[in-house]
Length: 272
Image (tube, rainbow, N blue to C red; front, top):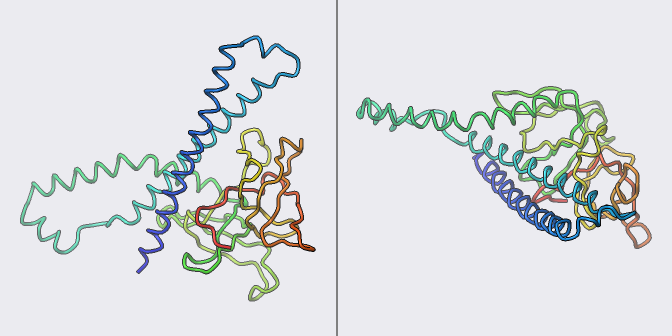
């Protein structure tokens, strides 16, 4: 049955939603601390070298990004739930519809109106994916029941609004790929992770040291789990300093630099 992977995807996204809300609560606590500090000693911002306003701005940026991520995950969940809802009544329901007449029709009309109230947010999510055409994204190309998740940099070539599938092109397949040429995949929206905008780092969520992420391994188009060692802001550059899992050299994990626009949040339940 195809429903099991769908249910698994829904459960993964509900966990991600919980994680985002917890992170939002933590950020809000820090924002409130900054507010109290500034209310108690507003003159502190006038001192040379004080970074209070800069820290507050970064906290608001982080809160905004977390809120936007929550909206994205919520709309994906709505889409997943919508795909599991029956598109029409079963045979037994049809017989019941005939028997109950107008009363059942009114009930059906109410259900349809409820679905329409959900539709705007679903449409927004669909528009967001449709706008990815021509852009590079991270894509999980392995099946839901695969032993390991494989993520690659691919190019979006088409989004089917009816099936809600994203068609992508792997422009640089590995040497072990059959045929050795470019390959296309049709994937569900939950298998696609957009990259941060290269030309707008100020609005990009910054992952803090110790955070697990999914990042493009240098010199390849494959993404692997990594741990943040240092952030672009701290390094005063556009690159993270990361340690990739299973990247051991001479008994230690080397630290590698990766551009911020090739780093995304680690999906819940990632298998590597």
